[in-house]
Length: 237
Image (cartoon, rainbow, N blue to C red):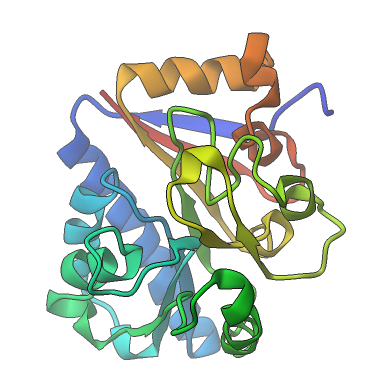
């Protein structure tokens, strides 16, 4: 592991300020991508943390019709399920100015992620990589994307030499089976962000950065220690 982590931190006094700042930063990257290359590609995380950010980003002015949005991971449930990340993204992000963006879901109509893997891989193969921005979150168990502690395919998902873009993932802490981009695929990006909220997660992240105690084995540490893309941490209490 490298001695020096390529990680910068941006702290805010409240989460609405963070949401506005992160939305402005991401929108700027998307605008530049559309201007320079004619298209942009954004990968976001689900869960409750990004809701204010999604609302702020949805109101940013840019040519959203040339932006593809996908998820870094997804629970293997249909959009009719309240646990669906896709449903949350559509309700919170793909509104207002961002309603014209093209959404690329990771769930397919198959009984398991293993059964739907070929269809999902074919779908993500059409994405115009690299990503212009990837925004990760972090759970209280140190997971990010669907890189869960003791996940059945965790070593494969974290292997930087793995050329697969997506994998199924099952873990005791995950609830439903998942589908997730691999770490190597997520690092194929021009910018990488880690958005966390709350004092407990700030301490957890600090422990992971320093490899203290059980945090030395948290999956998020693989994101912090990789040297391909700098990580910008956005935190609010």
